[in-house]
Image (tube, rainbow over all chains, first blue to last red; front, side, top):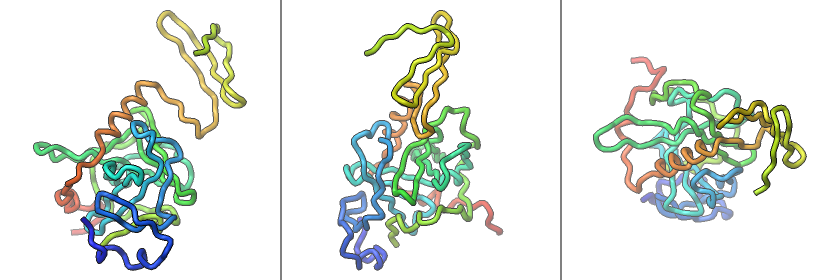
Length: 162
Length: 79
């Protein structure tokens, strides 16, 4: 559970923030921090609204939290941290992959490599880009990169927690 | 369900901007070419089902510790 002291103070000031339930408790989302699914996520067709939550101690990972169902959240990381490339993607979109957390005996972190989530910061939308196995390049081994460029406006659409 | 019979080289149109071309047909198999808007999602049914299953498997448990991976070395770091 996150305390209010861990929320960046700039988040609290605006009166337009909506306090919404997340895996970390209720958090204040600005309108621009609520992402809409441009196309439904397979398996979760009823979910439309999502928030991206970044905890400073967990970077480069971020959480994709359903704002329609508090029980649904995914751990994401930019595809570049898994060395994955997907050919032609729409301009201005940032590909992130769902992280599949390992079991107790296996410490290998895996990515949901055939279905990156594309975030369009200008439109405030996300969609899942599904490709055939042959259309993904890269080993898919987790190797965090020092810096991965982000599209303009992306950082402002993430709810950052200290 | 609408059922149509087509031969190789013939086309089915869906709406104003989707064309399904029958490229080749053989016993037990048909090869299709599909033209449509770039943002139209076109998938094999079994791939959609697989991604749906994988998405459900990716839902995070309530309690997660990422400490092991956050401490992993970063590519580009100098020691």
